[in-house]
Image (cartoon, rainbow, N blue to C red):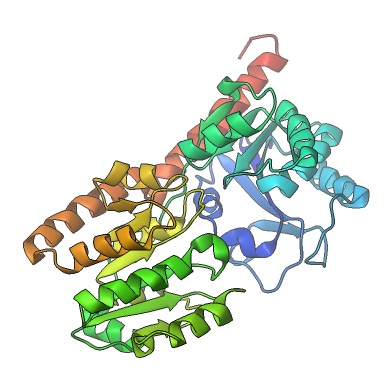
Length: 386
């Protein structure tokens, strides 16, 4: 703790590109009178981060992108940073950072370590289970981004005390997505789609876990019932070439658009009628929150934390994973939904998103979490006195 009474918090990630997560946004917005926040990355930097531009201390423990399993020198360097800043709370994200963080915190005497899990099946082999056993024993609190992730941690690891687990959801910059001033026609021009079509859109890394091959199959069914339909993919990844070939082999190849990575998602969402996520596995995908805040109805697979985000289907349509037929039926239903019903739904979803998932709400929760965990540790260290 600093001499002025602030709690010093360090956030630890594997790589620089993981700063897209909302947790860093929340930490950066913490009250500067109560918290001092630093950011640490195990991997290399590719460009200057907003954290540095905002005046935060940012450290990179390696100039390499591939880190290997464990580097003792990197552990020692991390411990040195934790000691130098007298870090009170170390908040680690995902497996590799959790391992490095718990080891370095033990060397540095960092009182509180939080280990956060962002996805499912993160204990998929014996080595991972053994490593998690060590990490979870040393961590004061294990955080999951959704209740489904929490249950997965409990069921797939050995001896995890239930009382150590808590849920800290992802959040969304609500104002950015809800208040975009671009018009629908302008957004559609940016997407390169017809102004009067029914636009289905999806956003994410083009990888097998996203189940986009099922979405393409579903779209072929949709196109036969809703001829004006168009399908837009925003994102890039290892499956792009395969998906493009698959789309080119359909009779509707001109209606499928692969636009790659785009930074202005809040504007492009304005051009979509329905957002679709066809994943076969997920933790808590923030892109759904972005679509909800932007007022785009969601059709998603019922995997991971998605049913929690959509309030078990009251805030959007849930379908089984790997089921193109049911996915298509839900897409068609939204394409034919009366405008009055659609408007009422959008207003309900936006308000729910603002109250439950906005940055402001989750920043307050994160601040309370840090203060509570530090106070408990401080009390325990001082024999129960405060």
